[in-house]
Image 1: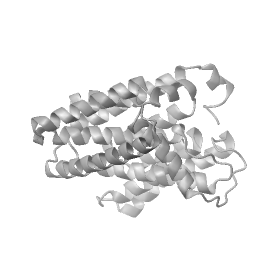
Image 2: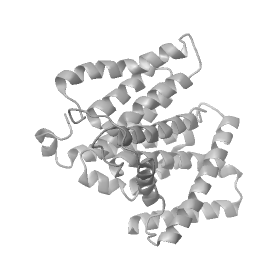
Image 3: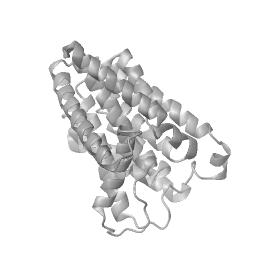
Image 4: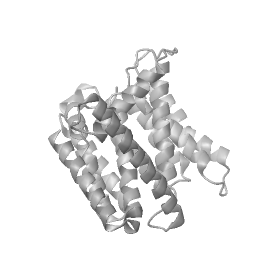
Length: 297
């Protein structure tokens, strides 16, 4: 894999993961700052940093950190330049060909986001083709430079959709309920907190539409939804259709946890002024409890 597994990359030691971690946190902070404000941006960045697998991933992997950074960069480009399809298409193409095959969902996200944009001088179809143009260019370059894909690539239906979804869910639940190991209790806590998060996202999205302003653009939630769904689709396609592909692990699925963290943080910032004092107190206690569990766990 050029740039990730060759000797020169290995010789960097912790430098590549450290740079990736810094870039991920910085870009996440900027995104949430624009959408939710500086206070929630700092809290969101701290929560991303405290995700139970964030630091272990950056200590042990040369693949996961750049992949996570590319995903956050993709979100930033989608939000900053929604009609500049060739830009986020280029991020997706570089990610899937030269960072990790697990990033195939970024290409899906680029295409879906281009089609999502309303026509504005350029039709949706033309914008979609421009989103795929960088992929064609990088494919041509990969024939000479190589890629992150193990050659020869063999395709074939492998089955096991439940296993793939279970692997993704396992990574997400580890970030969601750290330090809870009991099977039944863990299941109930994951189910309950997932419902709470979904409610927060739905209410936050509704609030963002009702109070849209330059500081709180309406496109944040659609971008999060499209990018997250596309990543899941990409992980399914990669695991089910590429012979020899492993089940999604922390390296591939942690991006979903980071996106969910940013979305929940923005939702809380949008709804905070409407909550009573006791609701704010519960939110602070839950956040403090999760942080303690993430650090101790």
